[in-house]
Amino acid sequence: SQTIHQWPATLVQPVGSPLSLECTVEGTSNPNLYWYRQAAGRGLQLLFYSVGIGQISSEVPQNLSASRPQDRQFILSSKKLLLSDSGFYLCAWSIAPLETQYFGPGTRLLVL
Amino acid sequence: GENVEQHPSTLSVQEGDSAVIKCTYSDSASNYFPWYKQELGKGPQLIIDIRSNVGEKKDQRIAVTLNKTAKHFSLHITETQPEDSAVYFCAASKGGGGNYQLIWGAGTKLIIKP
Image 1: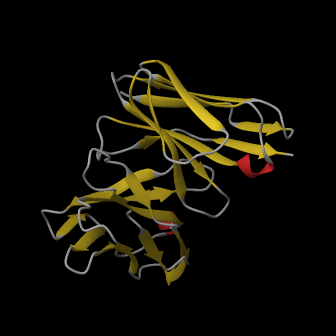
Image 2 (image 1 turned 60 degrees about the vertical axis):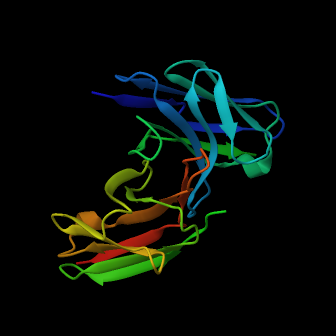
């Protein structure tokens, strides 16, 4: 069966520090991968999606970036965090566009 | 571009009663409409979805209806139970042109009163 992992679960970082969040998927090949951010009590904002290795599409211009160095690995990064980057970051995968998205457990990021 | 509005933002119903959550979308090219349930501190999980070639779909106590003319779709939960308490999100596909991403509603917090 397929599983999706995210780490860390919780992260507290100072403003201006770098960020690296990792997401890995097991049990499937060539998944579509997604990074979302969810502000407290709000909906899901799509940040990046990827249909293959090295193929990243950005939905929202900001100081975050994403990379897909391996088929089932998706990394969210920032060189300098802002206060507004605080939120709940969710990684998801699907077998194809417009198919069920399976979400990871999320990373709660607090920027102070 | 596509915009999805979801109502109400909070819904409180008595256990055993029915709950209805509604979403409207703007892009007539949208053809896929999933509903996700998110429990506290967890990622969302798909509970039901519908594609534009059907008007209704049921799965036990959960049903979704789609009105393409009016561009709205609804989630219906019957015989609500305490474990139905969660935040529910609707979404709509962004449409054609090679960009098949989902646009999400803001969510509805469903509270089941014992």
